[in-house]
Amino acid sequence: MHIQAELISIGNELLSGQTLNTHGRDLGTALSTIGLHLSRDTTIGDDIPTIGSAIKEALARVDLVFVSGGLGPTIDDITRDALAELLQRKIILDSATVKKIETSFETKGRKMSLAATRQAQVLEGADVLNNSVGHAPGQRIETDEEKTLFVLPGPPNEFNAILNEEILPGLKLRYSDIKPLVIRFIRTQGIGESDIVTILEKAHFQPPEVDLGFYPGNGRVKIRLSSTADHEDRVLAAVAELRTLLADFIFSE
Image (cartoon, rainbow, N blue to C red; front, side, top):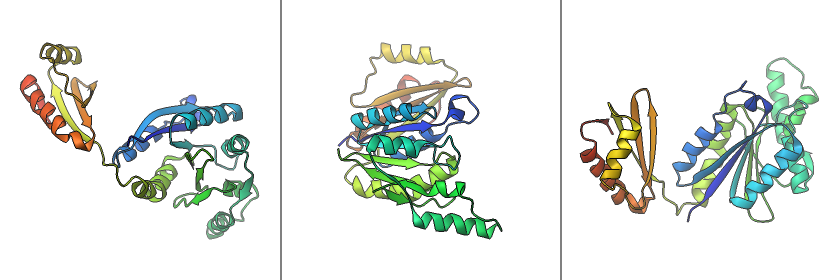
């Protein structure tokens, strides 16, 4: 079973460069630990038609779609509205989240504003996912086409809290028959990426069922070898072959 996921990050501040988007890195790493694969990472602005079309297209391609951002209390937080329009569902207030926000305000000696309650809005029928470090909860939505849509707030600490505490445990159970990828890294120095490729091509280095990645930087090249758990022997064989081919340049594995 090869389960793929897509991420759609929403926010004009991401496209303008005002905010660094780390969600793809964090989600990709988290999913790979349980054998799932992030196949696409898309960043779009705060526009309802654009949000709707991006999510619709993603749901047509993969079984798991993650959406982040646009769940705050301000007028440009329109992710819920776009989802309601796309899925033809009502937006409702989650009473438990309203109470949580109210309590948070009271502990700070403040009165909860009407705008703050907007963060407690969820789509009708969604499973509400607790946000242990912020106000806006996550949501899990099962579509009529048996696809799963996860909706998370944009701040990285909130995104990762919901991902690690609420989403990953459920995905581990749901896909318990999937094993994590086998991944090995070889790090080289004193040789450029093109020279490495030349050596490997001359040796006809093309290990079957093993994905290769080359990541140059700071005068070094990191080589990534990965495959499914049932092909671990092929990864290890490829690593052994690289040790021979690049013996003079490897400084760590």
